[in-house]
Amino acid sequence: MMFALFMLVILAITGFIWALDSLFWRKKRAAGSADPVLVEYSRSFFPVILAVFLIRSFVVEPFKIPSGSMMPTLLAGDFILVNKFTYGLRVPILNNTFIEVGKPERGDVFVFHYPPDPSIDYIKRVIGVPGDKIAYRNKQLFVNGEPVELTLVGDYQYVAPGLNMVMAKHYQEQLGEVRHDVLIEDNSLAIDGEVEVPAGHYFAMGDNRDNSKDSRFWGFVPEDNLVGKAFLIWWNFDNFGRIGNSID
Image 1 (cartoon, rainbow, N blue to C red):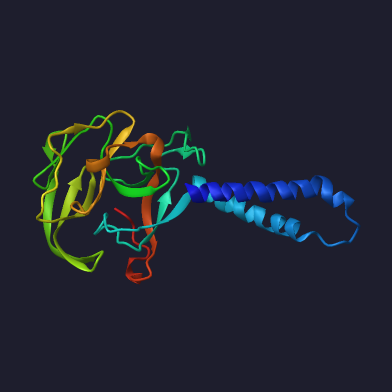
Image 2 (spheres, rainbow, N blue to C red):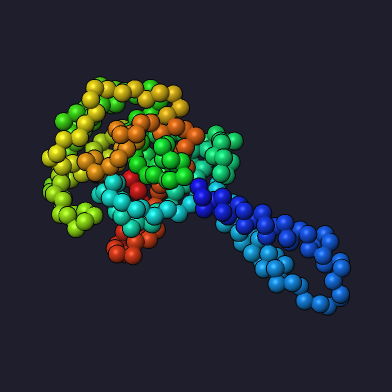
């Protein structure tokens, strides 16, 4: 959000300088004289900044995965692309929807403004949509009273921050029509009882179930906080084999 605001400010400044030069300053300069450096830079950068701003605001935006909360689907260091119009076109900065396109569905990997601090962007998986009843007991996810199918893949070992070795079980989870990977450890982490997702909100969880601060801790994701749907890994400096992988 802060980067979008920064781009908007630079866009406004360069556009304003270019407009002033076109309307007033150019007429006062001697014929054949060179343009001031500030004007030259503004005229050169304004179209580029405008194009980037529009693409990032309404088409696609890049993000970097900072942590392992979405392992094994996404790894720390993955650079991903997020579709900005899947959930509707939104006013930049304000994030108000002005054209309805679609809504998040169970199983989507989505980016949103972190509810306790909207200046931070989070990425999780949509587990519950408005009206759903969600529970997580004894490592088992329940949606509307029905257990979500889990299939064991095998053991999964990774290095956590602090160079701690973590041993987890790798499962595939069938969430509606989406089949995706999750990691589950032996230590307990659960919702006590059941929660119902209110209208205009979503319940989000990380695929690394025991190492994710998500809706189990800070509550629901308001619709006004939605950014977009993640769909592609476009770069990873440590693992070139991940480049071009779709996000399921």
